[in-house]
Image 1 (cartoon, rainbow, N blue to C red):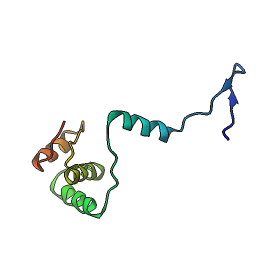
Image 2: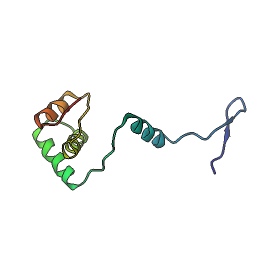
Image 3: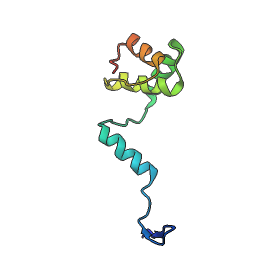
Image 4: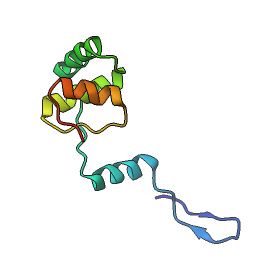
Length: 91
């Protein structure tokens, strides 16, 4: 059972929501699906990294979008350009 603490004014506080739980709730509210990478996505990410000047995390996101037929969203123009060249829909 979680304990309750006292704030500086002596009032009882509820236990803090974990940051991970809050992040998962925010992702779910956006309608974003989280996918676990598999070997095929890892191989595709390496190929994309070799073909385009993008970071490893961006290559994994792009590879995942390709494998799932998803739309890719990013603020990184290099990643968006790579996605378009790979035939991935961007938003």
